[in-house]
Image (cartoon, rainbow, N blue to C red; front, top):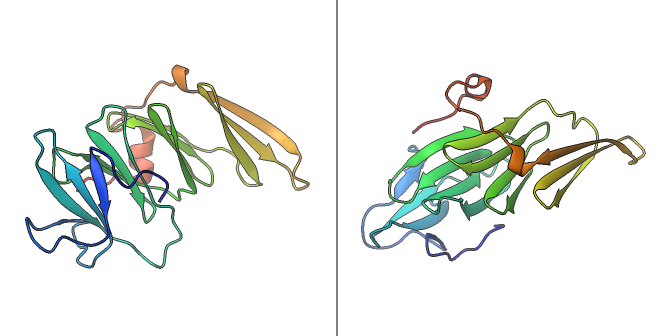
Length: 187
């Protein structure tokens, strides 16, 4: 796990609680114990989500609070779930072969094999597709930017991309091509 396990908004639990309200399985078919997270609503009440863990998928696990402090992003099993702590189900979910997730100021940057997704909250997401990551690549963070260096076969820098976070125009998910291509999941 790459983020804090205890936070005022959420806490990663070692196991499902033995008492209290029933946990919410995510996805809904999940009945076995997985990544157990207790979320705290603005009114102080809590609820527990049980995220399915699949042993047959190589995927990162990541959890972090987003910029609006009401939402938390949970990445597990090649799926990113955006959770509003006050709503007992995912607000939004989308799939990707996420190799890395990085918290940069108020953004979470998700790196896939040929794309980058920048998440600020459930309404502000930028999908940058069709990056040529066919060869090795190195991603570094600068002040207000993400630098992507594409390396050739001898590991020399072949191409460099710089993405300025302050200049990002976020996509309207429901009118974008990404929605059609990646079939954003809504539980």
